[in-house]
Image (cartoon, rainbow over all chains, first blue to last red; front, side, top):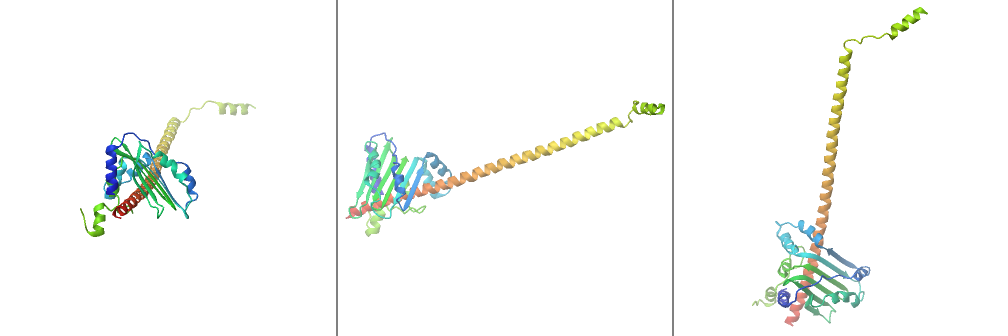
Length: 185
Length: 101
C-alpha cells in the first residue's frame, strides 16, 4: 500500500487540474447474465449520506468509514465471476479504459501477469491537488472487477480499513519486510 | 247534535299549559344540549387519539423503513470498501513480490 500511496502523492504534485467522473457502460449489465457471481454496488452521494448517518461516531470502525465517506460523492463496483474463461471480451472493458485517459485520469499502477493472465490497473484523478477519484480495473480470465470511487480519498484512510468489516489487513512495506526476514529500514 | 257541538268546542278550546310545562321544556333542551356536548367532546377526543395514533404509526413506519434503507446502504458501502481495499491489497502484494524478484 505504501508504494501505491507514494505513487499517488507523486502524481498529485504533477497532475493537472480538472477531471470528469467515470461512467460505467451499460454493456456491463449484459455480462451479469453470463456470470456465476455478480457484485453490483451503486452508491451515489445521497446513498452515501444515508449510510453515513448509520455509522456511529462512538464505534471506532464506523468512525473510520464515516471519515472516509465524508469526502466521497459516489462508489460504483461491478464484479463478475465466470465459470469459464472467455466469457467477456476486451471490447467490454475498452469503453472504461477509453474514459481513463489523461489529462483527467492517470494510471499510477499497472500490473500484468502473463502466467495467470491477470491485469490490474489503478487510476486516479485529481481535483485541487487532492485525489478526486480512484478507479481500479482488474481483469482475470474468469473474473472482472471494476471499482470507481468519486470524491476526495485519502489512501491512508483506505488502508486503515484493513482488518475491519471482514476487509483483509493491508500489510505495509515495513511489515512485509519484517515478515520476510526481520529486516526493517 | 248539540251535545256533540259542545264536546267539540270543549275539545278545541285553548287550554293553559300546566305551570311545569315551560320548565320541563327548558330542562329537556338543556339535557339534550349537554348530551350533544358530551358526545362531541368524546368524538373530538377519539378523533384526536386516532390522528395521534395514525401519526405515530406513520412516523414509526417511516423510521423503520429509513433504518432498513440505512442499514442496507451501510452494508453495501462496507462491501464496496471491502472489494476496493482487497483489490488494492492484492495489487500491492503483486507489486511487492515482483519488486523482490
